[in-house]
Amino acid sequence: MATETVQLSDTAMMRRALQLARRGRGRVSPNPMVGAVLVRGDAVVGEGAHLKAGGPHAEARAFDQAGSRARDATLYVTLEPCAHVGRTPPCSKAVIAGGIARVVCAMEDPDPRVQGRGLQALRAAGIQVEVGLLRNEAEALNAAYLKHRREGRPLVILKLGQTLDGRIATRTGASKWITGLRARTHAHRWRSWVDGIIVGAGTILADDPRLTVRHVRGRDPRPLVVDGKLRVSPGARVFSSPGAVLATTCVDEAMVAPFHERGVEVWQLEERGGRIGLGPLLTRAGASGMTSVILEGGAQLAANALRDRVVDQVMIYVAPMLLGEGIAGIADLGIVDLDQAIRLQNLAIRRLGEDVLLSGEVKYCSPG
Image 1: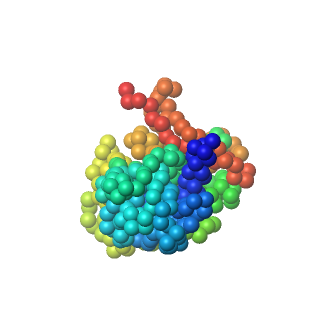
Image 2 (image 1 turned 60 degrees about the vertical axis):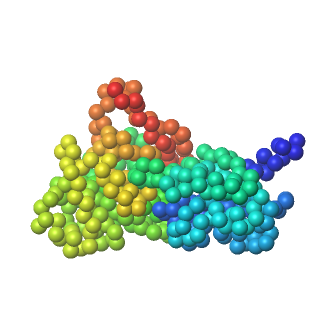
Image 3 (image 1 turned 180 degrees about the vertical axis):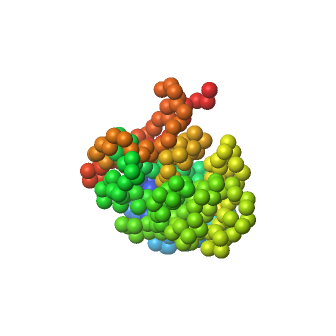
C-alpha cells in the first residue's frame, strides 16, 4: 500500500509540473516549456515554470521559492535539467548545489548540448534519478521543441476552416465567415503560440491578409509567404509585419529588390518539380529559430505540404453548413486507392460554439 501511495503522489506532482510548464506556451520558443515542483515530506515547498526565453528556468524559480527547504527534497521536472551554459547557468549544477535527494524527470532532453549529461551529473553527485514518468504527456507538450532539436525543422500544423462538405469558400471566393467567433478565437490563440505562419501567393492575392493575431492577446507569428514565381506585390499588407519572409525561386534581383527595400527577408530557394520544395524551406525556417509553424493556405500549398510529407498535425474547424460547389481546402493529392489515404491518429474532437474542431497527428501510408 505504501508503494502505491508514493506512485500516486509522484504522478500527481508530475501532472502539476506539466500544468506549470504550459504557462510558457507561446512565450519561451525556441526553448522548451518546463515546469518544476519541489516536495519535502508531504509538502510542496517550491514551484516554477520557464516563462520567457532567456529568463530563469523552471528549476531556478522553484529553488528561489523553496529556499533552504529544498535540501533533501524531491524535484519533479518535466524535462532533463540542462547541463550547459546558455543565457542562464546550468540547472543540473543548481540541483546538486540545492542538496536535492531525488529527481523525478519526465523525459531526457535531445538537445545535443544535453542528451543525458544533466542526468548523468545528478547521478554522479549521488542523487537518486528516475526518468519516464508521464513521458508521453511531456513529449506531446513539447512536440515542437523535440522535432526542432531532433530534425532541425519546425513542427508543421495544417489549419483549415471549412464546411461539412470540405469547402473553405464559395465558388466566388466568399469565405467570411464560415466558422464562428469561438472557433476563430481558438485559431488565433494557436496563431499566437507558434513561431511562424505559412501561406501561398494565392492567399495573398485573394485576401491581402495581415496574418496577425486578433481576438486574443499574444505575439504575432512571423509571416512566411511561399511564392515561387514572385506574383505578389511588395506592397501587400503582410510585408509590413516585422520579420516577414518571402520564399521564392526568383533570382531576378531587380524583382526582388523592392521586397528588400521594405525590410522583407527573401529566401531564394531552388525549384523542385516546378515549385518550391517545402523540405528545404522548413529546414531554412528551423535554422532561423522557428520551432513551430501553422500552414493556413491555400489549397495547393496544403496539398504540396501533404505530398511532401512535412505536415505533422492537422487542425480542422468544421462549420455546420453545406456549400456544394466551392473552393476546397486541399487540392488533389493524387490518391487513387484508399490504402494511400493520409489518416489522422490520436484524434481529438472539441465543440467550439456551433463549430467542431478535429485535430490529430498525421499518419502517412508506407511508401510504395
